[in-house]
Length: 250
Image (tube, rainbow, N blue to C red; front, side, top):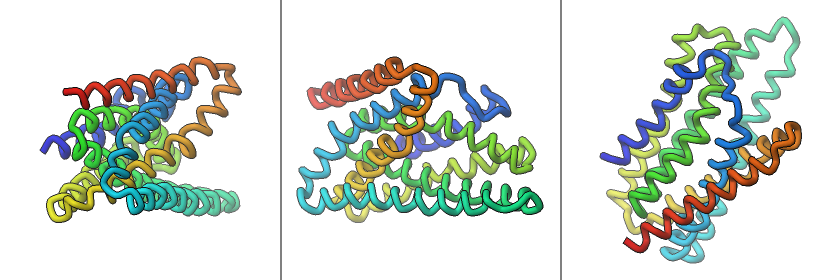
């Protein structure tokens, strides 16, 4: 039950962000502190918990699961990115329709992304509830600015604020669905937990290095805030690593 409640709390951030930050789809300072800290947290969770647990359960197949998780997300991101830009290249007369299609694709992509977040959260809980909480916090830090931005995209696509909020929340519920699927998987095939933890590790590694880091890198060089961003990343790694090591001593 705590896994589902945690996943639901993360899903609800799609509403909390809108309530606090309004229509703009922007959250000032995210690429200076919040997202860099989330990157560090993801790296800490991946290298200090998920990867060791996966390889301990199955050294060869665990490694395959980790690489598979990374490649699957790499493939999915490329498909969605290509589709999105294909529609962005339409002419002016097609602009409204193209924007609507892009918004729908964004929602479907976010739904799948949130399902993987649910799998990651559940996988971390299966290893250690404390690590599950830390993982959920890291995902929440990365989800808040993303959900706000997606809300802004839906508004620009022509949806009313109410409909944009509802659609964004329904997409965010993918986290709960992914967590539920993981619980069902573990109830029937608990000896294959390395599949879930491996895919979760590959997923977080891709998100941290290929999804979040380039944006932070670009923004930090543009604004001259590399040191604060780098420091926040290091703090994220250190804090999460320390918490994981502490839970292992209990």
